[in-house]
Length: 545
Image (cartoon, rainbow, N blue to C red):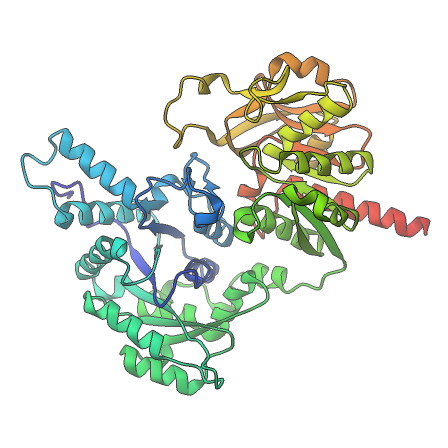
């Protein structure tokens, strides 16, 4: 039964906690997601929780330079990009309840205190904050066989201490066979080429000082761990040698599950959690993932990604969706970075070398004119083009300017005084004061016009995709824009959701973000169609030659 804090310690089945040591960014999320993939292959229903110890309630107002892209869930939750990894590896749709932040926890507890829910008691970190953390984990895990819980940050960070204390309490509440603690650490090389265990030793010592003892230690390294290094980590980490696993660098993160399987990590975990007798026998487990990520490829495509953030993580889902489409077509995809505000410094030349052009989502004025130059290039030179959210809006602006002759057409997001606001603020956004969580967010249905490119791509009369935007095509300009060549082939009521050009090999823009629903085993239709058009163009060129 729930306690006075609303915490019910009976919810959930098996729990795997994943902590990190030495430094952040080691790949805890990929390690956890890869293990989850293997457990799903063994027949278990797996879900995940990502803990982010920052004070933000969500990731929605964060600059990508801080935490990479803002990933959008089906219910509109704006979360850390690691939840995207869990959705892609586990092929599940998560909700905002699967992301736990310090801001979310404190906001809820303080709100309850203000409304008198604690009956005059002194509200403290223990038990009120820690119970709320545990409550969120258990409620997200309820109904699933296994819940993976990744604790963001590094052991020893002051902001993570309430979460680690909650984890300590959690371990004490559970039978040994129902909870497993995995600690991911760095095993670097010394200048003499020796793999060093001292950082791992100190990290485990830090973990144990707060009452947590790892059951498994995963060493992240450039190369496989040497046997003597495993033994040393096991000795100082107080775990069996067979509980030390090597997660070394591979050329594709989708191969990490194969690596962990070869290490035997999944079998060890199932034995430790007393799940082995419930697992599908190895000979009968799905091999789809292995076959997909190890297939021979038949071609190599170069895609120009035109954006303003010069870091990979800012467009992670777009890059991954292109990779998924490549897996679907059996080709390799090289994503070439084109910096939108450096077109005059030589970046425009990179468009000449590209097989296709993608303009992703974004906000703000920086790089806008460079992105539109890329769109013009794609439109005038019959280069396959895919525009996502802001890339859709800029395609509308570019067409209005250069085809319809509305030379000063723009979005009111960028130019409030434009005489032709072909892109304008959503009607329900005018009176908003808060920025966090107030955009048009999450999954919405789009009706697709039969006989269009969009209909061919989706193979259906409708699609449901995730959104994240405040601006849209101005209804007053829809008739002028729909000149027979530019076609709005997808609509949601009076909102324009998909555009395409009739006289172009492939020119598609989507107001939504199809990249957020793309999976290695289920690639996004717009991305599959985009690469398919490129391959068709290349085949035509080869036939002519």
